[in-house]
Length: 110
Image (cartoon, rainbow, N blue to C red; front, side):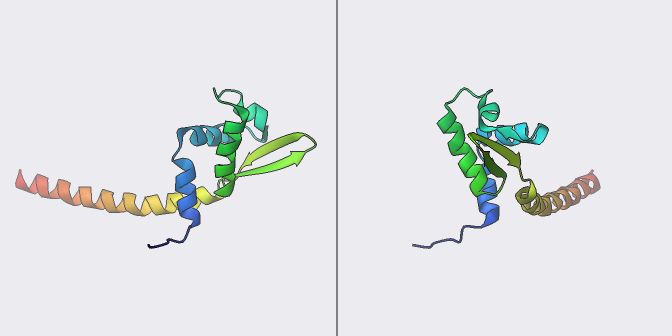
């Protein structure tokens, strides 16, 4: 069995693959810091379920948490998304160039 190295890019894409986690990231991008309770308020799920999503985001480095007394506040760390964006942009350029070449060939045939 082949064992792959768990990279930061893999963790970022895995964390962002879930719509609830993307919604949590979106909320933190609008207002931060937010307590876990404030962050969980609009979701129809239990606080432990939200905490599990936050664990995944934290493991990917996308969210940092700080405990002050009994309150845990969360902040967005968008740094890991830069590597994901760079990776996606490389393929966006590839497809743009390929489609431009296809358009040129179609125009030449007409």
